[in-house]
Picture 1 (cartoon, rainbow, N blue to C red):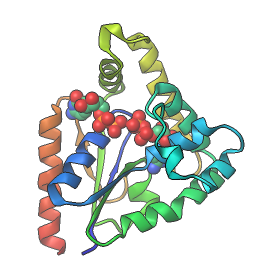
Picture 2: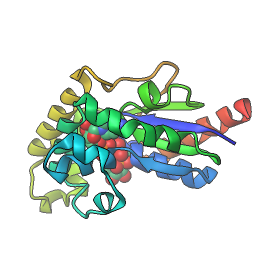
Picture 3: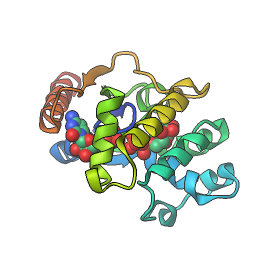
Length: 202
Ligand code: CDP
Ligand code: CDP
């Protein structure tokens, strides 16, 4: 059985949480494609070489989820040769037997336009920045909400305005605005939509 769920959207929209829940519910494999770009972004040296030689050790670093790694990722992610070096791996993952969920920015538009289910998860920048700030420790976070918001907005702009694989909803994507939705509701909506699509397609 081949069934790809493509989940795209801006930073802290809820993609990862929804992807993990959908993967667990249906027994699908999950790939957080942002980690590939984060690993390339913080490796240093020539990013194209880093993308071509990416290995498990690069993806096991403890600092991949920092704000700085997110910024570095979005800089190297604008380079077409970096994206090209990471494409085959993602496409093969998407079409593996047994089902796959991939989350990122271009899964439904570029990596797997034939995905059986596409979801575009979004929320206002203020709400997304607040979520990231809470993850960083809230009042104990090293950054203020304003700083986190500035970084989120800068990264969204870079991802949306780049020429190669810009962030945008894929044709036919289910739009899930989680601004006023708690995470459990968002997960339930996504899971129900995947279930309905599986009944129709399989
Ligand atoms: O993968 P992505 O960056 O899109 O987001 P995430 O890591 O799944 O979610 C970022 C944070 O926002 C997590 O702490 C989620 O629990 C939280 N979240 C939320 O509170 N309400 C939502 N509707 C979606 C996410
Ligand atoms: O978790 P969050 O949404 O904050 O970020 P991420 O998914 O880990 O992605 C980090 C950065 O990698 C994004 O801001 C994009 O610049 C880039 N990225 C991309 O270009 N294409 C993807 N499929 C995934 C991530």
